[in-house]
Length: 215
Image (cartoon, rainbow, N blue to C red; front, side, top):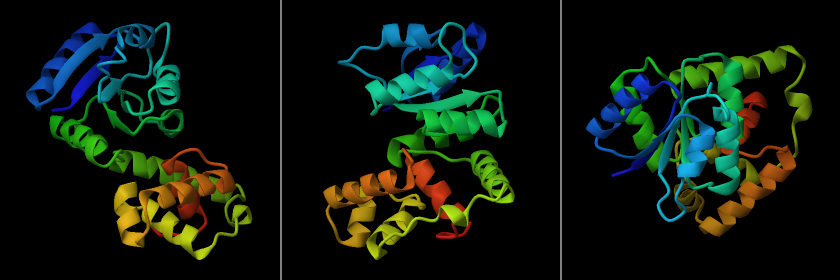
């Protein structure tokens, strides 16, 4: 049963969300009005599995809080829950370390699917997020970016990159490629350095932009 923390400055919405989250079979560990209060309530011995993170909050917003969690508690998965559906907010939250992004007017079934996905796969990319990412990538191509940024990769790195663009976990990728999880970590870290990206989202965007995988 996943433990969930909620960060949202709208009390009535947060209370309703807490009830919904528990009705979906999760445990609400605590609630916070903003990012600063969230950090104050964190217990290193009992960290939440997932934080449902609003973006627009006073004192410490969702971007800052997600970035802090990524640096200090990378095992805590952030699922952005916002009213904003613009690609700037979505991409910025993903860059800050969010593992998924859904809108506040989403159906309860999507919230459940998102929580389940970040727990089992490590990420959740809805049609909304995928569409916004593709639009951003197309815009990069229109601006003349893209293949000119192609970096030479060896066959194993290319195979890993293709697998990284699927819903497979890193352990499952290791099984597919008949190597150890540590070797996969090595491929991933090497590509992070070569491609100047920091996340799996960055790998996927590079692969799509440069025609290594097709969507």
